[in-house]
Length: 214
Image (cartoon, rainbow, N blue to C red; front, side):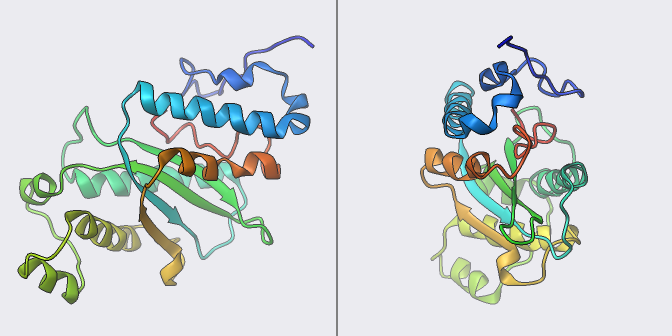
């Protein structure tokens, strides 16, 4: 079988060809376990090589059933802007936080939801640097006054509220925005690539290459 190099038409990741994409994609289905492992190994190498410090794992679900990858990628572009505007309300620095985005289909409806691996910045620097408005629950404010709080919790709560305000397609329930600490990043990378074995997408469409900092 002749090998080919598979590239994105937009050239977004032209210089970052997936080593796993050297095989003809017609053979993708028969090698789903291998493709998942190779994909995960490639992503973990990217994390280590680029010294990425992923700190949060975010899952977003939407109230309207969207099954189109193209439409979801357009929504992801807006979501990424909303997140970056939260941390950097004015000019975005060169060394801004990095995000990776992965789409997944709900088993029954086949509608898409989104997983994000996200870096963070120093909480006090973020809070003090700009004249910002954040939304917090009263119990969080009391915890801050009592000096019994973790800055990560402030970021998680305020960013969650920020996203809910500016991403109109989100579901309305509490489960529509799930925000967790990253934990073991290899476990998270393994989780977000389960679509490969489930054959929910053609090739590697579960990774939003255009909007991820890969």
